[in-house]
Length: 253
Image (cartoon, rainbow, N blue to C red; front, top):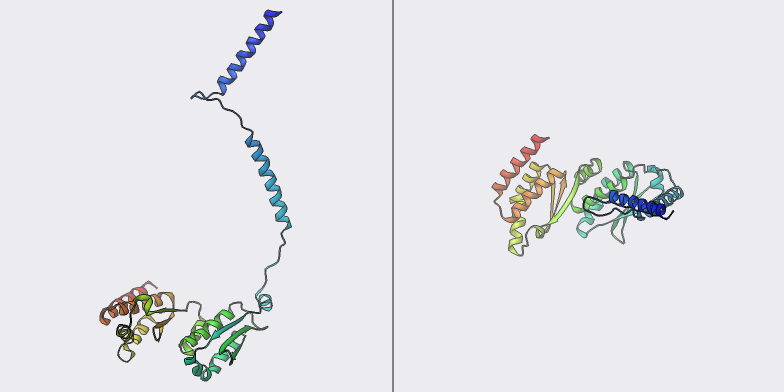
């Protein structure tokens, strides 16, 4: 009996050695099954269940239409009017008032104490972008553009106004600054009108600030030509490069 038990024990030890040899890699390391995998799976399942519960608890609201959105909003846009544009605003008030009230269906008034133009959506306003379009139109007029040119901002989505200062291009002072302004304007405004006609934009020069109205490509063309004039390039060279660039863009489209 003792011999048989010894034989069985030796067979069991041999079987265990065979199992360990089968589990061993070519490098001689033994693969050990970790318990972390089971724990991670349990944690992931709990997280999925909790996320599903949270998703069920979140309320779902239907999307608001333009009319309901404007009814809830009580936003008022205020635009400060500088002293030099106070008189032109009084003279052209009806030209500004009519398209904003009739076409955009907005409420507009001029606050005399604060000297600001105030815009607000009414019950008849249907388009959510009407308030922004009205603000762009009035802001363009305040910057110095004509009413007819500023109306294009209200009708077309591709147009916008870009503003920059001469100091952003090159720091100039005294006579050098005056010469740079003179190079941009030209004799009798000839250079400015040429840039406007070639690039199909509108340019306003207010002291050291320059405002350009037009599309993205046209504004880029006009801005590069004005920057070259500020840096000291001769007008003839600027005209040539500007016309060649305008010709290339016209051929693309």
